[in-house]
Length: 259
Ligand code: NAP
Image 1 (cartoon, rainbow, N blue to C red):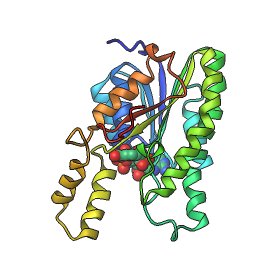
Image 2: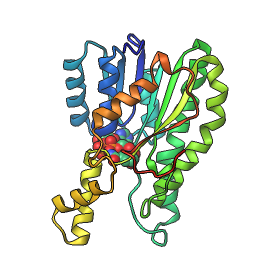
Image 3: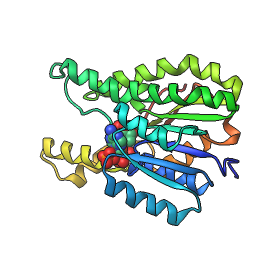
Image 4: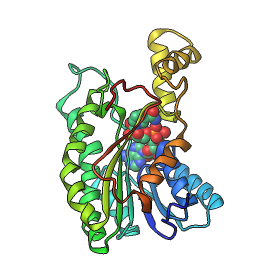
């Protein structure tokens, strides 16, 4: 299917690795110019080169921390009028409610709620004036079913989901959509890192921890970043203009609810 977005321009945040990288790569293969960001310059430049090799589009790499005002200003300077914005950042650390300080909560809200809201506020009105826009927030399966030990993430991402619900319904009249995409377990550095930690805590080999984690997924496997990128690109496509304010869960069947 031709997604109908060749020639458009996307900001893809936190995109040197994992889900952000896969989304940027897929958009680029659809002919979308991409402005990618991440903090580690060398990794970001390497990803930018890989995307340039795979697709004949403009790729700009902005090394910055998207959770800071300065970082977001650098991204918006490189691309003041994007057609597509993919909001993404690292997730907050795991832990226990009793150990989290108020500063931990403030940081989680800053990273996973305020940061996407700030980028939406800076870009959505221009999109509405131009009568075309797609905004996608990468959140988590934890929005639908909170995950024990990820309370910082559960809270901040649920807050974002509520915060954009009305705007998503206002903007759609102008052919601008705002949606959330909710990853379950995808095979990225983040998943590998958290599984290694779990293996150490339980005193079992990493491979065993991987198998145990997979056993909890009805699909019997982890999602691949490319599958995530394909779904994200569709949500940014010309064809998705009637989909707004939705939460698209990609979890291999983990969430047991019928709705
Ligand atoms: P990943 O493989 O670890 O990649 C994270 C990417 O984000 C890297 O490019 C990293 O580069 C960049 N990044 C992190 N913090 C940043 C910041 N403050 N500013 C700019 N760039 C930043 O992670 P992932 O698995 O793709 O996860 C992406 C998001 O989805 C996270 O919020 C995660 O919690 C959420 N999620 C993932 C899964 C999963 O199974 N993978 C499931 C549910 C939710 P630098 O470190 O160089 O900045």
